[in-house]
Length: 358
Image (tube, rainbow, N blue to C red; front, top):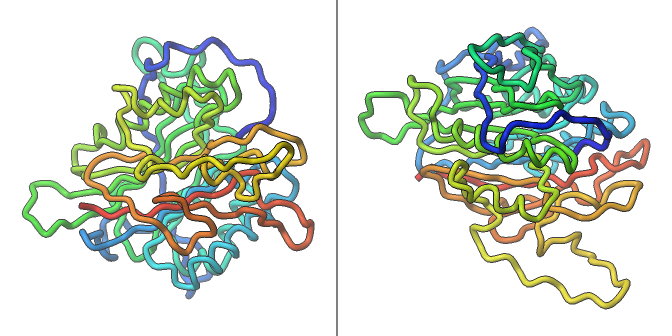
């Protein structure tokens, strides 16, 4: 969640998001023999996802605003390496609020170099999009990406068929970052099958609510494969900081223009604990699925900011390696601090879920 106050223009109506042309990303893979990141090949080599494959997905806002993002980014990768092992297998990382300093730490981390393809090794660039008619941004025709951005890391053993960003209607440089993984269902199909992975950081702050529903509707259209005729999308999942500040926003995924499933609702939530006056909830809001409001110098209202939403032929399963598990949803990074500064790695908890194509 972004903490800086800023003045925003009045947004369009909730669902009127113009879909901009995608900005192609160039995934990279690390080569030990040359000690550098090089372009990864699309749909060449690697394995395809199958019905029996469980893909473990971690989503984490790394907090671009606290001191020393480089140290905190490195600490986050080391923590995930301990949690999922030196060879994590089919593990996907969806990261938000990555900044140039934390990106560099991620790219330099040996665990990342050994195991992942990264969506980008440079911050995304602003691009000019002159569209016919009304611009997809409010008044300007330039999408201005923020100094912080999203990042996807996928197993280097799997085959990627596409990777791109789609800008939102936004005053904060927000977008949807998408990677398609090739899926083989062992049946003859006229087109390549794909599982679509997306990460996003919806508009922040209270006034950003007017943008968030439209942004989520655009993500939904992407997850349902409405872009990309060359690949038939069998299912899709988005993980991100959804900035669900108002309680009503926990219903956004049910709106007809969105129509996504929330992993948190795949099993009944546990009963809320009965606390005595001034008694502390030592579970950090487990029964509510809270992910934000605990690891900050300022007192904040605790909220379930971070979510997984999905659609299509997917089954969700728990990730038992994670720190804290409720139903199908796991949390991680609770109480995690850097060794040198003794500061929280992030003001958000991470979340994790397993998905399996059906």
